[in-house]
Image 1 (tube, helix red, strand yellow):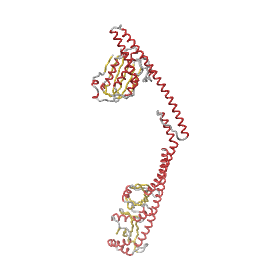
Image 2: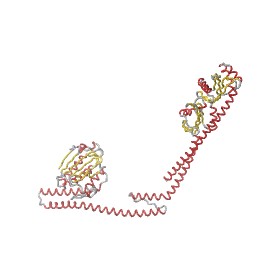
Image 3: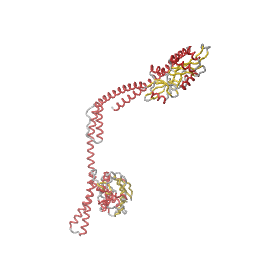
Image 4: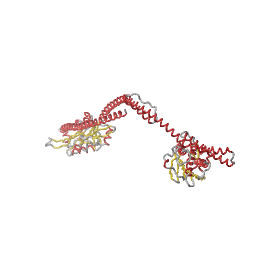
Length: 585
């Protein structure tokens, strides 16, 4: 279902991209053609406008009254009389110049600077082929006509008459039929435009560069436009550009409508496909998914998950085969567990039976000596000590078995000084017969007073087992037996290293050293000492590892996670000063 939905979304997205790309290309082509037509229309309209203006100006130049006015030669008279002819023409610009090209009278309907206006008129007289006059922020299409006394061929030149109309009329004629925007710009300044004032400011800040054949895109405010320009500088008194713009806003609205349509179709396809996949899932895939979950659950140990009994014939056959296989595996597993349990019991019985018989024989024989009544007081005391040692050994074996059976249960943590736990373990080891003749050295270092939250009895037991193992190994070698234990406290863990100078750990048991009932080369013991030490360390967030082992040097390391305890919580018994190094033999 997810794949189907993903495919539908991808196909819908690709369709949207392709449609948008194609629409944008077509719209851009249409807009470019509209811009090209607008530039052509402007040229045609302007030619017609200039032709009409030339005709009007020719009629004015033929008026006898205007010629008579120009023959007066008096500037004030000409300026006063020119107003009447300006009103008659109805144009936005009217000017008269004498035969020498000096501007005598000049009038505009828009606010203008006289200096700028006269400079533009002089430039127009200097280049009669120019049609556009730029006056500050105003633009005029102009017609220049000479005045003759007599006919134009043989008459005397009296001056010039100049008429002009504002270009804004032509802009409206360009914009209204085609729906485009138009502007005239000179030196980055907008002279006339159909655009809003804010958009004109953006246009001045980002002058366009596209042509009618190759329009360019420009962002003006929040709207995008396609822009074409036409250079009119050769017919103007200053650099001049016609800028024609077409907004993409209507096209974007059309594209958005098509997008909504495509998205609606895609959503309908997604919903329809989802419903179809749900139906197929109920008929085909759900039984397979349930069977798959049953197989995974069985592999993880959950053996009672229901196997589907519905679906197609193939699914039902698979379910039946899996149920039969599961039942067979259950029976085989139960048989293996029973066999392993019996084997474990056999290994345990074999491991401890010899020691139990040894201890019981010692107790029985020494009890007979005591019962005979023929022993002296000192001999009776020695026999009683042997009986006591045998009872303690038996108790120790039973306690080891009990601790092994209880590993993994809850611990009773309490604040303890690790140096005190080591001291108690060393004292207990010193009282054990296997420590006779062994030199035991302790090294605590400066951080020996650090209090941690641990199960003191278990940690003490683990340290005792490591020391017992080290003492037994050290006594098995024909040298002075030595055992040392060091404590190293770091930021996250505590490390206790137990070193002996025995014969080392045999290669045959190094891989299974911490498994229960593993013992080689010892005359007695259950094989649980290292196993218990390792389990206790794991329960305290650490482990026991064999760092190195060779004749003369064997190092076991016990690491536990450090859980600091409040110093106030440590009992007074633990506040005693412990020496940094102590040697006992």
